[in-house]
Image (tube, rainbow, N blue to C red; front, side, top):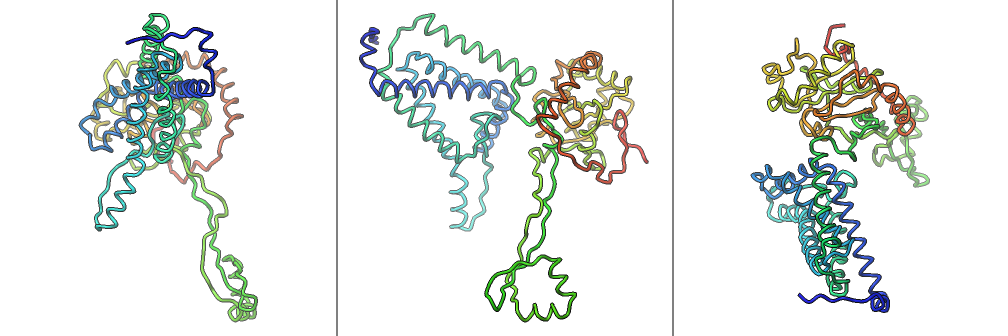
Length: 452
């Protein structure tokens, strides 16, 4: 292919409005792709879960075992495109790749945004009851920014227009040969950097955590729900003035208790309707599906999370997949907690029957085990198993099983954790709640249930 080279003087003369538009769009799209790839790069496990949802949406369940592979490929591709755009590398090729990339994802997000609407119309016309699971968040920006399917589609329409402009202007960008330093070097470095970050964050925990379970967050508030306080309001029309007036239940009770007032009210007012009025807004938990349930089905998560002293939640999603290597640090931490009287619980999505049959932790009893669904546990910790350390409802630290320290090392940094806790409380004041809920249990260092 013939390469076109421009001198510095020629390029300066050609810097008209189109020059700044095409290069401005090139830099913007490059930074956008790099940022979008990075927030997924630090949490490849989370993006793989999103890929699984895509496969299920398209009835490709048999491909779910490949979700991690496709997550790696998609993140690498997006990151490389971003660097190529930002550094103006082989724009004739990069513009083609960018355009194809944006066309594909614009069509995909169009399907996600409108398929259920079309399905609803078909059901209304033909009286059918077809249903389809659909991804509700595209995952374009990981857990950093959540967008609806409509928002994602409209966003991609705009970015597709930018990609078309870059494509039409591709021959006007500075053209270079495949130099090792300016061309191959940055591309290969971007690949190595992306692979390093993804593998590191996959083996450990994401070093940039955008989930509610990040260190420093008041997680007890994220799992706490409270129903709104609602009062009923009754609307009546004043027969003399024609105005609509509202009466509370207390007001109507007062009127009905007075025979004279009641007679006057019935003759001068006509009932219209009853409506609800929110007195105190409720609290909708972001993690409403997270629970810490005992064998009797009682959820004690508030009691566990709001302990005044240091305590641990040890996440073991699937006991059947555990081995000595994964449980080595966990066993050591449990033994130290038992010796020092530090509270802890074991949280699993494994059935109680399997917990009883698999005594992998060699405990005297399984009364320290509590139960939760696997999905919210995956949100809390990407690795299985792992440990989260809490105090007064705040997350002080979290570790994958490979990184769980000895209790002595944790207590050696207790002063630093205490200082951090005060900072977290200033940044995010706690939501005070009633944790008793008339639960007839007492929390012991290993959270065993005993009769009061």
